[in-house]
Length: 239
Image (cartoon, rainbow, N blue to C red; front, side, top):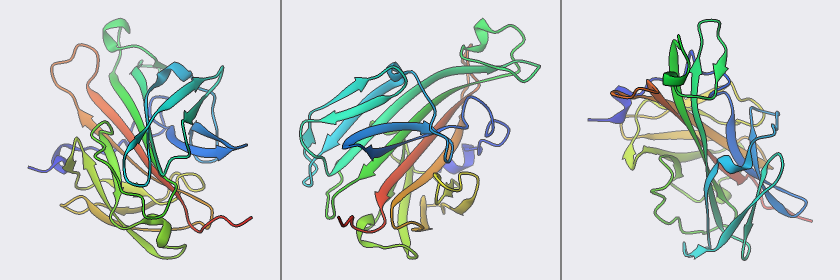
């Protein structure tokens, strides 16, 4: 059975406090910064919500990485320049009240909550051509490029495969340019979790997916919201 049958796109929740924000990384002032935002918005967030960061060299071997937790965001500090970087953020449980407010608690602590979700956000960045992707089981919702994204080029299609907990995720809608057009859907995965996404930018491309998975037998949430991004440069950077 494919995950697609149990996936509901975050529709009602899409614009909510709980899940409207995505996660990706950008190189800024020589640092790898974790960005939490929606489109052009770059919001402050609690750095302790970063639940993991993983860096790899071109052969897919792990590089030690530390998370610098700053007052309003997080910075990733790998021991040497990585070919691949992944990061996870646990945004916790959010409950919506009847008057449409969102509170960062499970529904057992929010009297009269009409729905509650727990949200997780992931990002995978590819920096070096020819990088070999390691197993990334820690990234529950994953957008995997099926060819080297750094070799495709703007205006061409990148084949990707979306997995949820390691299995193909059917019917997942993909946003081809989350940073510039976060509400514009590009395509949807087929029954094998595959899709073709147009590479839009010469600079940073942020391809994103977002799903909601129903949760049963929980006193605190009725769904889990998962967001994931894949980032890479459309063309090599020239000084």
